[in-house]
Image 1: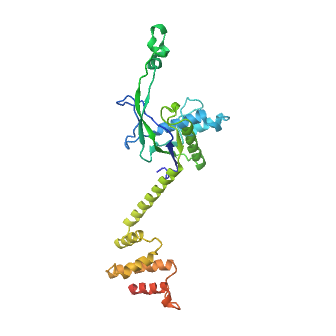
Image 2 (image 1 turned 90 degrees about the vertical axis):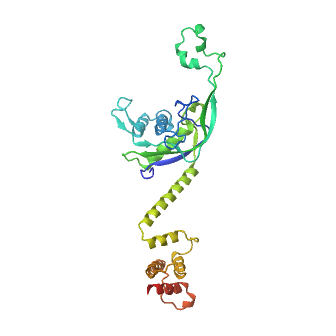
Image 3 (image 1 turned 180 degrees about the vertical axis):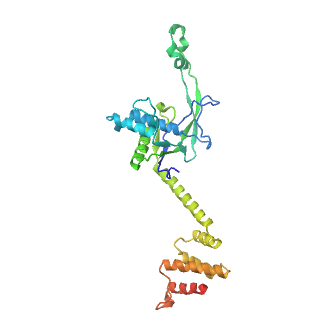
Length: 311
């Protein structure tokens, strides 16, 4: 679908732990985002979009000396909201961000964090008298509170971005994917990125393997569609040629072997197969009715053998 829409794909592999959705409800306090239909850890499309937007707005080095270009990229890639800095209308962006999903089984792990000063984080800004509010003061007498949570230890995620109705040229599409790679390598994706979570590296080998599987699947579907439109005899011949053990064996040689071994008993079917063989031999320019030394010419002998079934 991404290919058909003129979009791009990349596969990024985690270099350490990854976690997202920690604010979701969970029996052990901290959740993990699971894909609603696939049941696997994932990064939502909105999360991918937000990460890339933050990179463009704050960190994309090539835009440091060009405020106008940074604004243009932000508006064209992510859209505009009237009233925001530089936005004079409400408009959708040129890009559609898909959920990042694993392309192979993920490996999970249990991690733990131990906050020491929870009350300080919650109420530190409300302290009026430290002497009377010791539980809210950041001090060494507080006990750590172990908080376990589930994390992704190892995963390979497919990130996909496609253009919306407005055309995004190939150069722009490559720029988008390159920026996303930089953002994830430098900032990380998901939660706890400040602690090093969510860093990923590009893995071209896995993407190429995935694309090859998709290509073979597409070819098989096209073959099945062609088979469905064939007559029973045409379908039998097509399946026979597709399953031949020696791929270097010429199609007409295999069919002639089957024909002479009595594979088809119906005269009409034998004639149709012979016509198929003749067409294949003519295409290879080996259909020969005359020759000086027939006893040494296999193509001539094959031509004569086929002629018997055409009479």
